[in-house]
Image (cartoon, rainbow, N blue to C red; front, side, top):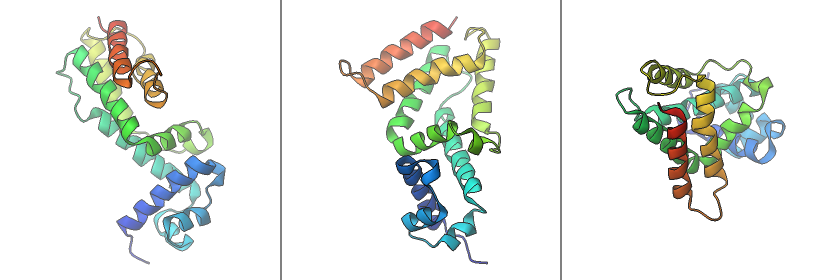
Length: 186
């Protein structure tokens, strides 16, 4: 068996993201991925058993990276204002700095056939635990954490993906943080 090479694996991952974004899930064949990555199809099979496993593994890795980025500066000792401000700004920063990876993860999220079989991600569980701790301490209102996630993250996607023509993204972000804080904090 041939030795695995991190650079080849990274080339395959980049190729998968680029092809999925250009051609969609159905346009990503092993041969196209291999050609784009500059490797042989046999090399792809060194790293991944099949296409579905490859897509799920890459999705899981990038989704965990997003949450790792979001959670890196969050602590339960923060005030509610600090927690929301940090989380929202880190999410915005991640989206604007990693657009291709973010859009790959987003596209994958809307493909239930491929998402089935993905392992449970630890990042969302950690964020949920932090939200529940803030709720338990009376800092964040006692809402369903899924709804809190929606208030925290979905408006930021809109700002990052389609900035307002009349206001700077930073001004929109500042205002959205204030709105979210007023809506969620006790």
